[in-house]
Length: 276
Length: 296
Image (tube, rainbow over the protein chains, first blue to last red):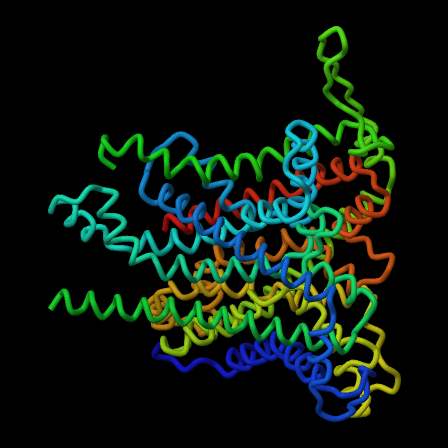
């Protein structure tokens, strides 16, 4: 841009970023407060991090959430990538519009509606098929449903910008369409697949509303436990737990972003080299 | 795709299609069905709408009582209106805050753009529940905001923000701001600076050029961003539940209480269906602009 960015815009951006980050930084700060009273600073301490390790309920919930997140994001990555390939590569097939709609709708669908409707489905299925048992399985299915949308959109964008002439060249040299795709295009979209796995992982780890509806007795995910504690007010051990989760998720996202960026740069360089 | 790729095509199309059909679309059918049932004191807690009688006839027992209840009990009407109002004003504030932010990022040097976008994205992916909880640390009676204002002598008694509607507004704006900035940035970034220069050359002031060129061209981003904030905000549950007062009437909270408090599944299903019909318009608008933007 030739013109200088007006000061007003820069300060608006600075203000917006401050609004987004100050609460999180304050939360992390409070998590090191030695005093159990939230409004009194009792000196620096990591005592609340220590108490987390002795809270069996939290540990069990964290383990369940991790298992759910790994399974759901893996499932979503497979289905979402297939959907992206179908939508980008096959211009016409019966159900294309339906698939487009079903991929995009979960992004804006209020969670509470998705949660209720899916629970009603699972309950009706149990009546008819005696399956699925409400708990781990139903939570994973629900999470795959909304995560798939994010994968498809990320991979779709990548696939659209991928150069098809490379794949065509491989086919001209005798590779089958499937092999050409696997050897040429898959490596190109791999960063998008990995980063969408990470994004799904964080989305699944964070979901409260849908999990609360579709979960059964005894299967409480970490957000469900946190919610019931937070409902009672601010507490120092939840501050510590929240800080841990926010930092872990932040690292995941930064890694995903860094990977996408590096792949982009490498591709730009390779294109440049190929053109001589 | 070549003709010989055809059978293999379905191996790619069918898994996501069938999965989403079964677990995303079909559930709405079941919710629709159960919204015509009546609450019952067994497991599952509703009557059969469709059943087979002993003499092998299909028996259809449709009850419109739930929908009649929605119309007659003014709680639901009020909740819908209150949710729409809350979502509308939160969206407006997000737009006012988010537009200059997106514009500033779009005008930043390329190298900085990536970093700034990541900075905006990071909270967007970070735990929603925990961010709402973090906000409580700022706005509660002895939180950072009140401590700061008292310290500066601007107020003499702590402001009561927690458990009020203002807290719900702040929560929604804080949580959904990134949803507004990203689509706005996507359209503003594509804006050709030559158009602005042309407008200036033809005698426009920068403000006129902004109103006549930038605003109309960024309209798809404004609509996409507004819908991304508005639609989930209408159904928001976590924010009114944690920050709002006990009598807060957001529809998501009413629905949750109906389900987990009163265990009235058929009424909850009817509320969900009515709610979905209410949102069909905004969702259609969003889809329309989204598809157009993908094709552009």
